[in-house]
Length: 64
Image 1: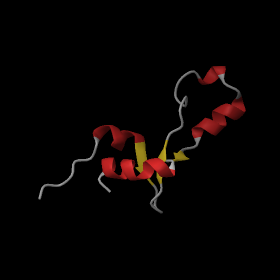
Image 2: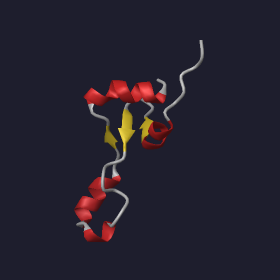
Image 3: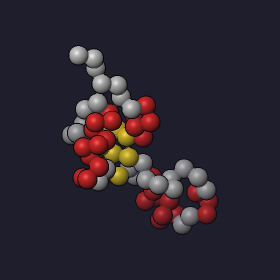
């Protein structure tokens, strides 16, 4: 049986932690940082865990 291919868009957007959690970058993180408050910019820097309702779908795309 052939191996499942990893979704090339998903592998750029999600990462798996050592404990197995799936993380993603927050929206509005890359562009126009000067227009944001410093507190907002700091908050956007941290990655966020994928919602429980989406975990199954993301794992399938990543081939996990």
